[in-house]
Amino acid sequence: MRWNLLLTPRAAAGNGPTSLTRVSPDLLETGNGSLYRAPGRRQIAIMLRYLGFGPRNFGRDPLKFITRMNWEFFAITRGRTAPIFRAQDRPGMVATTLWVFPPGSSHGWAGEGLQRSEIAVFHFGSVPPELETAVRERGHLVLTLDEAECAQLAALARRIEPDYESPNTTSALVFQGALIELSLLVLRKLSIDRTKVGSDYPKDTVNAAVAWYSERTRANPSITEVARQVHVSASTLRRFFRQVRHESPVRAFAKIRLETAMHLLAETNLKLDTIATECGYSNTSDFCRSFKAGVKVTPSVWRRTILTPPKAARPE
Image (cartoon, rainbow, N blue to C red; front, top):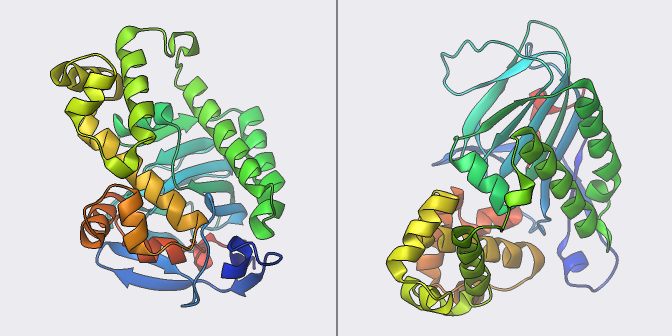
């Protein structure tokens, strides 16, 4: 059995070496579905929210529906499995496949009889905007992997496991590198033409708007203010966002505020009212309401929860 390791507060406060607590998984039922819970002791979240790999038997022990709080990369590198979106689903089993799901996705996993499979699973709090756009416009991604790519993902999971289990001062860079590697793999398989990135006026304008807003999240500038700074009208800015990111600037900026809040929740000990102010929310209630609408759990639950697998998701 693999036990998950949880960081204790003094590590993040910089007052001493990282302290780790071993916990067994425990289910928590919420209004948004089943989430995994660690004990009541406060934990410090890290950018890599969950890592799991190795043999599984989803045929004998299917994984029940769980609402994901984070971005999920789920790869089947050997054997066959499939996601389940409804209790009555009878999905066709597939091999050597990578799925990418956004936060808020509810699904389980099924296997084939007593056949064991090999998986590599990574959860992150956020992903690069190019990948987010690709996933949002499709709901989720399903990509076929070749043998080399399966080996790449299995090796990636093994490589970052030491930093996941015993985080240190360079672990954040290791996790960032893993996210970049995963994102590049996905985007290349989607045949994204990287030579065109940032080469046209609408995309340049949207990127400039996002960068300018990101530096002023605390002030929560209006669409009109942002448009003025990038030298277009508010209506043109809305049209460019729809064209480039398939979403409104209001939605894009709301996600920036949420991701800023996630960073502060994960990396600091700031109170919720301070985080609300830093992210441009009018009050703590507005912040908590917006966070739950976007992430499906409250900021307090997100802060103290690192996903740990149930029996069906643990190595045998």
